[in-house]
Image (tube, rainbow, N blue to C red; front, side):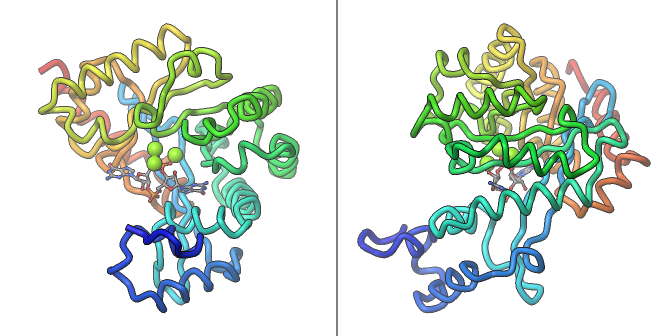
Length: 288
Ligand code: C2E
Ligand code: MG
Ligand code: MG
Ligand code: MG
C-alpha cells in the first residue's frame, strides 16, 4: 500500500508500515548502487516432465543479498531496477552468470531466464541477448526466455517484433504467469511463442476447486491447438500433481519437485536425479 505522491522508488514497496520510511529509503538507495557482481546470486528451479521423471528445464531466479542478508524479494528489487534504469544491466548479468555457472544443456536440459517488460521493449534486445549467449558454450536452441503477458501490453507490436527476432536466432519463448494478466486469445494466437506457463494461482486450489481445473484444462487445450508446450507452475503436493496430470499436463514446476537451489546442487540433481524419483513416486497415484 504505497502512498500516492511518494517517489517512484518508494512506491515499489508493498507494505508501507512494515519497514520504517528511512530504512526503506536506505534499502532502495543500497540497491541503486549495489554491486551486482558480488550481491546478486542465482538459484535454479527444475521443470519436470512427470511422465519420464526427467528435468526438462532449469529456471534461473535472482536473489539479492548484502552481508548475508536477503533484503527484498526479487519481484520488488526488479521493480526498483526498472525504476532506476538498471534493469538492462541486471538482465545481462543474470543471463551471463547463468550461462557460465549452470551449463544445463550438457545434460540435455534447457536453461530458462526471466526477462522484464523493459527488456522486451528495447530495440537492441535480440542483439544484446544473442551476443551474450554467443560468448557462452550454450546452443541457442537450449535457452528459453520467460516473459509475462503484462510485459507485452504497453507496446504489443514492438514486443511481438522483438520476440520474433529472438525466435529467429533459435531461442524459445515462454509466456509466464499465464491466465492472470489481461490475456487476450487473439494475442496468444498471433504471438511468436513456444510455451504457456500456467500461473501458480491455479495450482493452489486445483484439488478442491473445479473452476481452477476447468481453467487449467482450457489453457492446456488452447496450447495443444496452437502447437505450444504447456507447463504448470506452483505444484506443491502429490495430490496437485496427480490432478494436473489427470487433466493432461505433463510439464510441472513447484516446491513438490524442487525448491530453487544453487547451480552446483541443481546440476548434481540433473545427474543423480532425486527430482526424477520424486516425480515418479507420484505416478502410481495418477488416475485416482
Ligand atoms: P516467476 O518467474 O513466475 O517465478 C516463479 C516464482 O514462484 C519464484 O519466486 C519461485 O521461487 C516461486 N515458486 C516456485 N515454485 C513454487 C511453489 O510451489 N509454491 C510457491 N508458493 N511459490 C513457488 P521468486 O524467485 O520470488 O520470483 C518471483 C518473480 O520475480 C518471478 O516469477 C519473476 O517474475 C521475477 N524474477 C525472478 N528472477 C528474475 C530475473 O532474473 N529477472 C527478472 N526480470 N525477473 C525475475
Ligand atoms: Mg519465470
Ligand atoms: Mg510464473
Ligand atoms: Mg511470477
